[in-house]
Image (cartoon, rainbow, N blue to C red):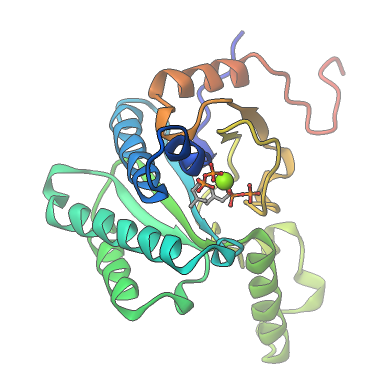
Length: 237
Ligand code: IPE
Ligand code: IPE
Ligand code: MG
């Protein structure tokens, strides 16, 4: 029997730069095409039983890029959020973020807070945008908060276990992704959800992110549904 749909899919949306380069267009246009591809995809995902989508939008390592590209990405994100806020009555998608927002510019932080407020009233698909997100950074922030709670006598060292640790991560409110998809043919995790991916299934697509469609996601899901997930155990015992 085929397994059920994954409830949580995480996506490394990679390949915007190469998509633009192939067309001799500026990178900015590639990122815009990437954002449009996400919007289109989410419309279809909303019609399914999938409950959570986490997308990698900007990593803690992406600050290494040129200022111009970073500015373009932040502007695109602002536009995306402002459009969602403006048209929010049309959508039942719940949006929040993972990652450290404290270093982002104040306007953007304000918009994100507003976005979360609107989203708290929604009941549909949850979209988690990974923004200035790095798995290592998330773990370090969790460790710092754990140490604080131990020092303040709010937490006993004996009570630190995997569940407790997970409750200090940005993803504390929902389960780990069953499936992680990466586009553009790169075969690596690039610091995405490194704790949460412990037992996720991976699917790699050669398509560049702006070309990735719902049919491609269905292929990833089909592949996932055919796999045996053993979690270290045996299926025959
Ligand atoms: C992914 O596309 C988007 C971000 C990292 C923000 P890239 O910009 O990494 O695209 P490539 O890898 O250069 O093609
Ligand atoms: C991962 O893609 C980050 C995002 C998609 C936001 P990168 O393009 O930054 O990753 P590397 O540098 O190829 O590992
Ligand atoms: Mg890339």
